[in-house]
Image 1 (cartoon, rainbow, N blue to C red):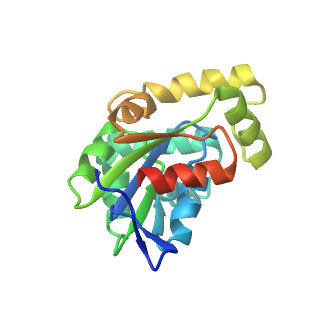
Image 2 (image 1 turned 30 degrees about the horizontal axis):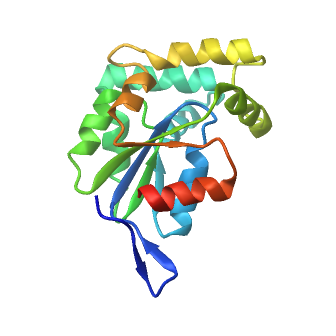
Length: 190
């Protein structure tokens, strides 16, 4: 694979038009997305599609409601429905966050310039990050966090298949250090 080129010695030109992000809860997908946005990428999220659906229905946005609604949408409209919806919004270089089903990956692989990046980190670190975010995570203890993750790892054809998506990734970034270390990995890998 070619290495990133430098324009005027300061700006990195990434080689992928579409960077898909998958990974475990609290691993740092949002930090990777934020870095790419600073480098000129637009941002779309499959989870934001589910949030829009919950808002339309007037339902509370929690981790459990996101999972249940996402699975219901996949059952009703096909497992790649969220990927199809976000691609309607893509106009230029874009980071696509929250990929959680193998059919979503398959659909996105049909798009020109797509790469799937897995973001991972140790579970204890991810649990602490999730707690600090202050979202309704449906897991107050590390044990509950791990149990919820097991549920998300191996959903059926219309469910969350995070383990499968991690296995399908073109590259993996391990986010267990500083933000600067994460940024270096992004520069080196993409």
